[in-house]
Image 1 (cartoon, rainbow, N blue to C red):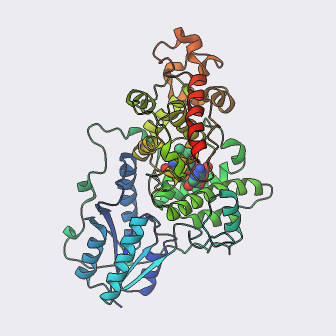
Image 2 (image 1 turned 30 degrees about the horizontal axis):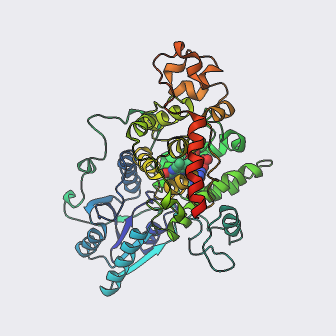
Image 3 (image 1 turned 90 degrees about the vertical axis):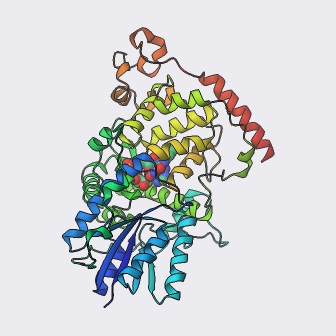
Length: 471
Ligand code: FAD
């Protein structure tokens, strides 16, 4: 049996990894490869995601070694690197799990063509989405543009397959010398001067074991009450699986079947609500597959004519640093900076504030999130930014502008979330903490609001009216 190359990308796990499983089943030597892709058409990772990837790769190598394998690290134009490894090892097969971005797909199909021309068996597997984006179609054979019918159509499909187990053993390819793999440290993925990752280290455990701890903990302890608790940023009610899903340390198939088997009496509604969130992830990838420029172009093309403000550098800086004078916005932006993650409701509030109250182009916010989120995801991030901005598929109507004060009172009435991330407001009582300007003597270090909510709302509605009339 010849050598098989397994090329891992957004699937940094050994369990429910069909490509890896198939390589082990074939029984020859296996070369498990990860490439730090330097192709010019692949979006470079942001800082927080690079931090995550370092530890995720470290953890994956340890997992592989437990079953007799090892991870080969290389950098460069990924497809060229894969071809080179195939030639070096004399491999007869190359296997991978599918990905869905346009450039990524083009790279993969180029490799498939090259393999066919060179007598190499190339095979790809479904591993990272429950429903392939081309598999779910409307009655007219079109892709979906609205979430609810999309998810209904998904749920009418055959049940997603059972997860496949981790291989019990692998035969690592024998190569002369360790120089055949890069040392992870030479990729310089971790921040050094300054090292801003302290908050990330205390919050997260990247890698497959950490992902499974989160999964088990969520189903054992937090699923009950999820529907209600998921709206409260001060509570740890959601799964926090997003970065683990982003890097494929846990698969949606594992989550789906964990949810099915935990069907204890009385939690069907919670499972449905949680399942629909996994459904949103599927929907975002469906959108990206059919609209590859989701991160750069407005989905609703009439938004091309939207009058975004241009002279906003100062406001954007205040927003990024959590110094807008609106506590719910600032707490969210500081949670993001400190921990690499932000609660979903607060993501919506901060994104609405930027795109509507400050009239800043959604692409600027999307890029900041891309740089700072540990779960920065090529589909979820732009799709959600466009959803909030009103330019996206099935988007929130533009005129629904979140009021950060009302939202704060509604979802964090006792100010617990605000106090955690805004220490300069701890002296304020539960009423004033949502509007610090009413008691500014007790919060001298906190900024005045950078924009008036009522006025900026009117300005946003007027800008939108112009787009609507063109649309
Ligand atoms: P849970 O509530 O436990 O949900 C489970 C999983 O469902 C999540 O891990 C995620 O994979 C998926 N999910 C939940 N909500 C959404 C959603 N609205 N859209 C797509 N998938 C969803 N999510 C990302 O994974 N990466 C991003 O880059 C990202 N950027 C966002 C930007 C904005 C402006 C907004 C409003 C939302 C964004 N989201 C993004 C969606 C959502 O905020 C996060 O997925 C969620 O907060 C992650 O926390 P969790 O794992 O505890 O979620």
